[in-house]
Amino acid sequence: MSTFNRSIAFLALGLCGFLAAQQASADTKIGVVNFQKLLEDAPQTKSAMAALENEFAPRRRELMTMQTDLKAHDEKLQREGAVMAEADRVKAEKTLRDEQREFSRKASEFQDDVSTRRNEELGKVQRYLVGEVQSYSGTQGFDLVVAGDNLLYAKGQLDITPNVLAVVLTKPAALPATPAPAGAPPKPVPGKK
Image 1 (cartoon, rainbow, N blue to C red):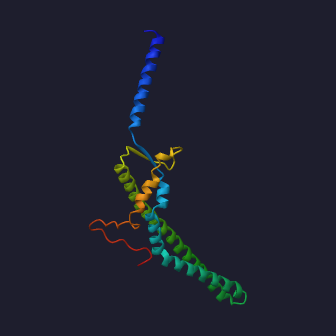
Image 2: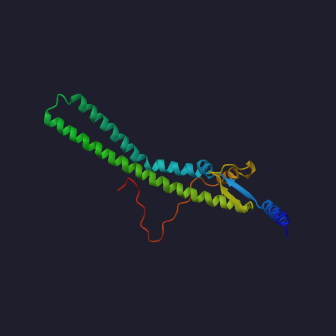
Image 3: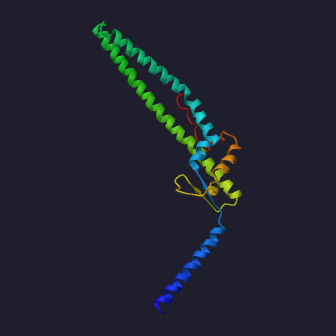
């Protein structure tokens, strides 16, 4: 067989493979989900964030009160420091520094706790939404669904995000509480002793 005939044979074989792949892809139902948009628009996310706001509101108020008191103590020290006795001024400055350190410590703990709880709650919502996408995809007969957050291009009809969101909007906004494993101690409530 000559080189020309081999080239024709490979070209024909490649064309047959291409046509077979086209036929197979015509039977495959593909969808794209913008998971970030789904997460942002889901009422379950909004509900979880509102619950976190309520959970941390008392500590936030405490920190704001501490900050206001610190500012008032600092302003008083600035106004009266020049006329105070040396020992009283030194004592007031030390007290102010100690209060500032305590405020910084509590503010840092607060931020850490908020961040940790936010990540926990978003993780629950993400797992829930993945389940909803899988359920929707299965009932609608999709063979492949891709999370399109970093997708460069997809035809509009492939985007099933609005359809999944419509299903999610029919569900309760609050996620069901996840039961603690048997024998596990109860979770402490942040900010309570």
